[in-house]
Length: 144
Image (cartoon, rainbow, N blue to C red):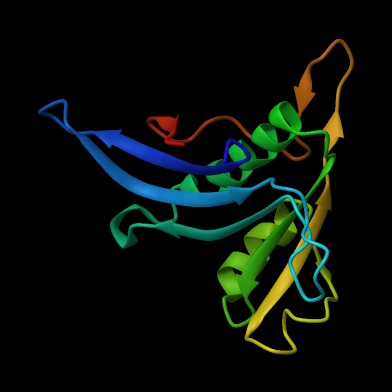
């Protein structure tokens, strides 16, 4: 589906070979009518290789998800599913403007929580991601 993306952070090593150092899944398909389904668009399965953590890659991947949502969908908000015991991720999402959102499934029937953020669209078709910082990653490629 062209509304379901996997975004990847790629590092080119000294031999000009790509090394995937992080990725995230972004789902912008229409929200199913069934109960207990995640609202969309939402990001999940964010992962950064342990050797590459604490370098801003996760933050950059989230911001690229936000830009993707604004560019390729009609939504002006995004949700993130996160393990409720992952304090570092929750703090990062909070710093990026996300807040906890109660849901009938997340945190009730599993150990995840749902976070939500309203995104900001600028004038003249400019996309402005709230709380955006400068790129900190060598290369970010859409691998969809």
